[in-house]
Length: 411
Image (cartoon, rainbow, N blue to C red; front, top):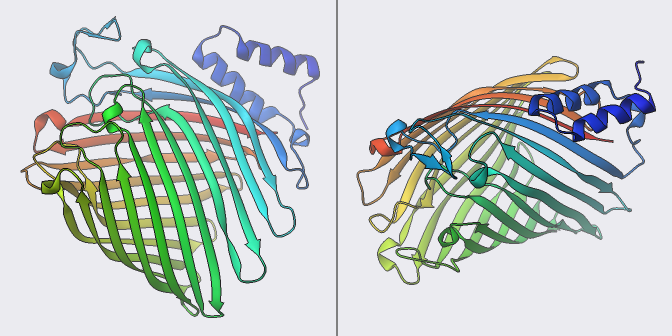
């Protein structure tokens, strides 16, 4: 087995931290991931593993401009020439992963700090972020089990609808789930989720959501799980302006998981929601929602995932409408071409119709993704993606090509 001696490894890491180009740093990192001997990895009995990662991205239209006519003369103090310019950027990160299983409990955690550097518009785009999460899968006796978890991330937000501005977003999630086995064929479930998002310079988009759920399910047979779920959400906007308002939402859903064969699994949800705003009653909405997910494994080395859905979402187009009806299709595939290599396409189609207006959007994204895992805990991924939007409002159109190369390694 080829190994890297202490001196050579130390020299390579010093080069990685030095003032080299993005390509040099990324190339060195990928080389170290591939060549590092498997003996440095933690064994199955170990539960704490340091983590390092690196990623390179190319985005041909990061601000999602419809055309050159939308580009201002300067962005973040840098001259644009009133032309859409592609942006390259890289992320470097370090942290740890934890997997601990004391008895019937399991505790998992991940913490990583990262820094993102962009080739253009650095005053707006450069940021330091992080990804923190922890989950406790608990079990009490033979009839009670569930999860308790938390997550907090800081990253760059989407530019699909906001124009040019500094747009880092901090998201926090807290969740609790408890399942009680009432009988061999019946179970009851209760859950609570707290979601918060904060934007660095768009505080009017900040939101806090407290969501509660109750469900009763019947188990067994090819229809593995079938039941009813009641959901309630309290939506709070701490910096609401204009048509934005706090809201409450109720939903009642029928859910089912069905496995007609060993190669196919289906999950479905059908329900009705009702949302009411505390200070913008004209924007209240209600209606049906539905979703169907299918997993199909035609062979032992291939997997196809399909999702079709219809959802009602709050709109961000202003006071003229109250919600967006979203109809979509997701399709992904994986094929294990070699023992450690997977490759597959992905496709997303979404049609958005904005109630109260004549505005509708057709969103399309598709591409190809390849993953290589030299050993457990190491992953290298290459993705090529095309994203487009065709809207009844020409200023909402965009075209973008995105290429990414990422590498992560847990020791």
